[in-house]
Image (tube, rainbow, N blue to C red):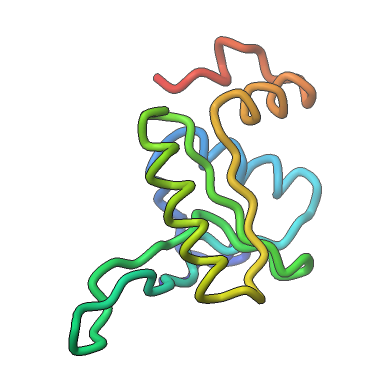
Length: 120
């Protein structure tokens, strides 16, 4: 489901870091969509998709997807694999993965304390 910042219905984020990114996008008047597209990245023998990758944000003015991974850092390897598959099957899709360190640096740069940048 595509939800935009100008939607009358509030967006429900999967975690606090996604919500913080949305606030940052709003502050800078960046148009964003939350989880607007899912991309098939694996298929069965009959050609039916078996796995999908749904990036967290899409910035339409930049044609850029952003995946935020700040909770379970052990999942970074899985995210990197899905991003590699996405780039292989959809080379025209621009995507950036932001991990916990990227998130903390960005939040601190824009005045959010390190404690506030931590997931609770």
